[in-house]
Image 1 (cartoon, helix red, strand yellow):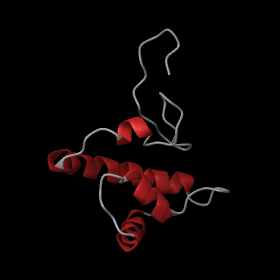
Image 2 (cartoon, rainbow, N blue to C red; image 1 turned 120 degrees about the horizontal axis):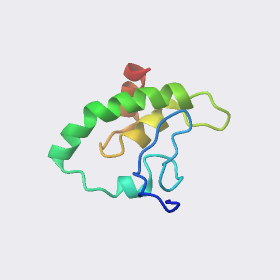
Image 3 (cartoon, one colour; image 1 turned 135 degrees about the horizontal axis):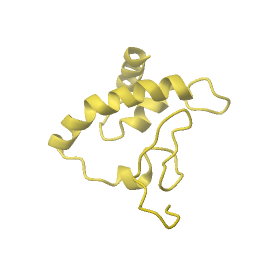
Image 4 (spheres, rainbow, N blue to C red; image 1 turned 90 degrees about the vertical axis):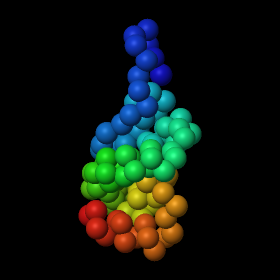
Length: 94
């Protein structure tokens, strides 16, 4: 969303984790639609792991908020994680 200024990137930060550009839960549908081949995933993993750790701290335990497994699956959408794998990642990132 822009208001006469430069376009806003589809980025976000805590504690709400909403997209600065479109207001959807982040990572938003626009960001999720970005192609993520193996090389791109390799560059995203370290950065998004740090972001996911912060998101778990910000979002877990909020009334109606997601649990850590759902947060991992949301923030690491580009990885085909099973529930058990997402749970293991969530435990490591807490």
